[in-house]
Image (cartoon, rainbow, N blue to C red):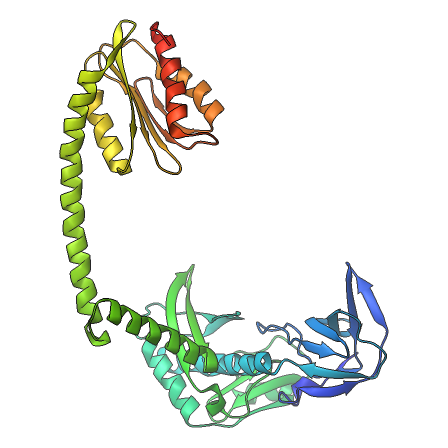
Length: 399
């Protein structure tokens, strides 16, 4: 078994490791050390990375025979100089201790216990039992007061008999000696992770958002350097937007509301004009339709318009007596509307089925109206010409 030195010291980043046999498994090389400061993935906290001799430590797992260090490269002859990635370890200390503080703050401020915790590469989450998210800021404010007070954080082991008197936030399931992480006069939790020595090292806890996940609320947050980077990125974005709108960031909310309102007015005006234009084009297309057997047929490749325009054009042609129309919107991928008006004895579905299979289009509909989209190869113009030839043949006209 490996002696887990990170339990007692979360700040040592370099140590000498005695040589041990390398093992191969599933195409990977690993080694179990007699003692190690490398933290393995456990309890919602990811593993450390670093180097062991001349090899990179890319993953660390806690297994029955001890802590396994998975390597890229050859560590060389031992003993080995071991180095832990300092930035990654410091980040995990901040995030994990910040989670302890925030989880207790939710208990004290909102009576909302934490159900689970995940420390991700960009943000962290806790799932809490909470009815309404309206007062989440109260827990965040309390957590940051504890951070600023630089309270001592210490870890120690206790026996199962001692647990009840400690008032743990969440009782552990373990029956052996249990490691406790204690945030001075605020939170006590059973935990095997790495933590800061004082809450001031967390620097800042910032809740980014909440969402309901089944019967819990998921709280997304960042701590320390992550929170500072998040603030800087959002501050830079606000300054950039302020520059684009030639206003101060304090005016952005009002300016954006105004621009949204203006955009909505322009969109409605554009839609009205498109509807009117579709009416004029429908008249012109109907007038230009060529004979096709006992009826008339028109095919149109529409360019530079919206799908809404294509639908409006089709709706106006649908009412035309004795008219078959084939419409394609030249975009990526193309949109298709195929239909005919009253007085046309033609079921378009069979023609659509064989043609669409050849060109890679999808869609369906009724005998007199089919809508779809897609094209696997070639151009929309060529595909439309092929469809026109098939429909003309079905109508008994010249293809």
